[in-house]
Structures are given as C-alpha cells and as structure tokens.
Length: 291
Image (cartoon, rainbow, N blue to C red):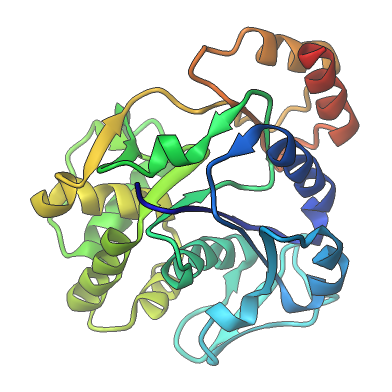
C-alpha cells in the first residue's frame, strides 16, 4: 500500500467551513498519514488552533516563488485578494489555491495526495488509504460532460491542452473536476515537467500566464494522454461527494435531503462557499441525518 495524505488549501473567509471539515474528518476519515493545510501567511495564526499530531498548518509562501507576492489584505477587488508578479498579469486567490494544491502535493512526503477543499464535510466512514493507496490511483472522470454550453470548463480544457503541448481538444470532452480528488505524486511531477517542456517556463509561471485554468483538468488530461501514466490510474465514474455547485443558498431541509439521498458511494457533502449557505445549517443537517 502507498501512504496517503490529505491536502486542503484554505483562507480566513472559509474558516467556519474548514472547522466543519476538520470535525467531520476526525469523526469519519481513517487511513491517512497527515492532513496538510496551506493558508495565507497572514492567516496562519487564526488557523494554528487546528493543528494536531496529524494536521499540519503551513504557510503558503513556502510553496510559492519569490516573484509572486500578495497585495495587502485591505487592497482587494470585489472581496478578491490579488497576487502580483513581474512575470504575468495579476492573479487572484483562487488561482493561488490551485497552484498551492500542486505545489503542496509535490512537497508532501506521501506517494498519494487526496485534495479536499474546505467546503466539503464527511458524513460516512471513509478509509482513504484503502481508496487511494492501492497499486493504481483512482482518477475521477465524468465522461463527455464538457461541451461548448459549459464555456468555463471548455476554456479550462483548452488551456490544459495548450499547457501540455497537445492539439486542440475535441468536444464533448471528459471532465475531471470533482471533490475528494486523488493524485499520484510521480504523475503530478511528470505533469509539471511536461508543462515546462511545452511552454518553456516553470509550471507556476505558465499557470500565472494562462490564468484561466483548472488544476483537476490539467492533471486529468495529462494522465489521459500519456499511456505510461494512464496505466498507473484506475478510472472511477462515481463521485465521492454529493455537491451543490450553484450560487443559490440552500435551506436545512434541502441539505438533509441531499445527505439522506446520497448514493452509497458518496462519503462527503460539498456545498460551494459562494452559495453562501450558512455553515450552522450544514452542520445541523449532517448531525440530524447521522442521528
């Protein structure tokens, strides 16, 4: 078996959601070596209380190049933090979180890394070691789910192909975006090397210049297009999470229904933070269903 770690990049606006994630992990998740949590440097102190023997709180600056630095927190645009660079146009916090997932996974001691965003919470027992630590790495795929009616996903797919030095993608294309996503560290390192080979610049600079990208589509399309890495993965087509991706806020009854009607394969609930669904409602719905 390969050792497995979990990795969560987060920031102060999501601290209540992150706290719920930690509560649920401590109750339900087994089979992992460490939980790496990466936060902005000026958020470190407010997240430090979550550290324990297995959960490490780490400053984001250790994973970012010196040429990429944040503006002061008070200098935001539409409540979005900006990072400046002499090598690209400014990037935002969600770009940084995607890069931190890659950089953090590359720096982890473990062979396999499972990315768990802070807007997830587990509601069933889950042995992540049994899921992701076997001979092959699970690769979540939603076959032919991306077409031109999903302009963001289509653009992210086109960006992934360009960064990897592939030709233009055909649509409909496979989607690799999901929740509780497992990566193989050797494949991830090979992906970053391919990005450098295709673009001529280090992978973080390439992503900053691309700006409109998805870390999951980049990894998924890399694995899918290189046979030696595809052989190291097993395609899974059932998501580990029941998810709410839309912007509308959910009430407690709807949340209870999501958990109660989740597929047997699902172990987590993901309610995107931009929906502004209140965390106490999510916690109450999960506790009520568990009871």
